[in-house]
Image (cartoon, rainbow, N blue to C red; front, top):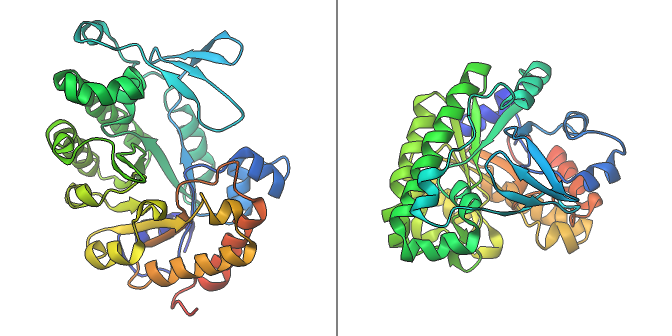
Length: 340
């Protein structure tokens, strides 16, 4: 069984040989500490990781050292970390009316995806990072202004949600033509204490678009993994009802736990997660990591439909030896039937 087959069968909650694993981000510092000089794809291949996550390509123009303007018109400031800090320009309905998003069908938009598919299709599960309803509005408005506008200008937020939905469905159609089978959306709806908006605001402003984009992905024949950090208990039923194939990461720092989610929803969705990257992988010992990885396998693997990963990403603060310990524990203990 190759990695693509293994991940797809896990998403379908079908019998497989072993629990698969992959991450949304593996920081280049961690990669270089484990396998110096390797690219992310080379690292994934040599470490026997099952999935490669691919980003959509957007051109950036450097406007001053370390500061870039991208095709969305947002200003990004980069540091040594994998994520940038961005500032948007839409504040009013007038700004929105004049705004023109980047062309999803531009010839360079899926160049990275084409390259990865050509090299690894049939060898690794290739997962395209798209969005659903929150990340693009946040990018275009800025986080603080978006959260305030949910209360003060919900019609503007709804317009941005509609833009995001239509844009990502067009991107998905192009990606399917290239041969993609799996997408994930990384729009976070919550933090460790709760939702970023009230449950009612989520239902009124965001959920209609969320349903549309998720069902649109499924109509295209795609497998869909929904990522959101935080405590999503107030809206988890709606997320599952949208038709997703997998939920990630079942955030342990926010009071989410695999056994509860698996017990209630394991007959409908697969689960991905959740060795704690905020605490265990960053500050724990290798022994701590081994114990937690085994517990995740014990909680998630029975009955199929489970993908082992960190609770968010392998960020720059993760101890390289701890990530290796997680992968080695999976190799040793993650083959079905699970025996710990």
